[in-house]
Length: 106
Image (cartoon, rainbow, N blue to C red):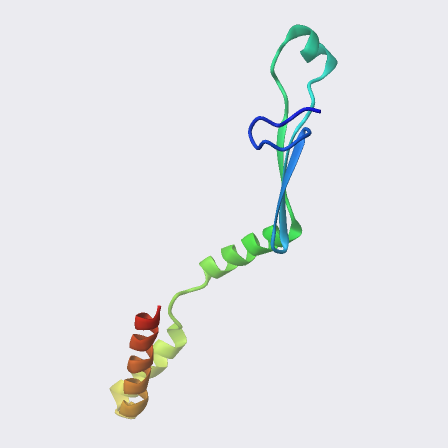
């Protein structure tokens, strides 16, 4: 029974399963003319599951989103300019404390 020298798994194909995803790596057997000539040309392939492709798509969409809500910034800027902006000091202080506690607790 052949053993894959890279992974130590038996056979010509190895699989690694993780939670809700599967990556499959395989190496094709050499063709008859390759065996005769000793030419080491095999084809390696990698197959990703639908879950990993969806994850990649979501990562790309998130990366394309703006970091700042421009409309909200503009609304606050206008409120400051016309004097109608009244920040809630207690809410701001509470969020600062919450943020610091989150950093401390890791």
